[in-house]
Length: 64
Image 1 (cartoon, helix red, strand yellow):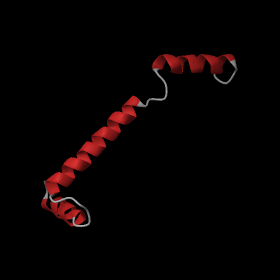
Image 2: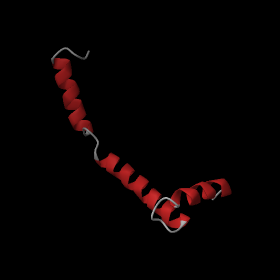
Image 3: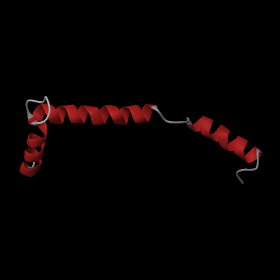
Image 4: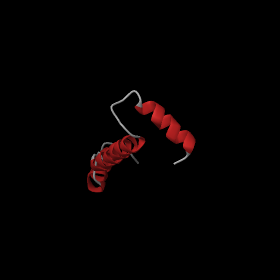
């Protein structure tokens, strides 16, 4: 890890309950990965559903 980044993180954790840079980095990475996994699960429509919506919009004259 670059020293300037380490120092920034060390300063940031002084205001938290984290006791080490390693603990903080592990927490942040877990949160980021969990968030990305959740976003992947929450796709608004499957490809099939999206095609059905497009067909309905075409039938209503909203799409060409």
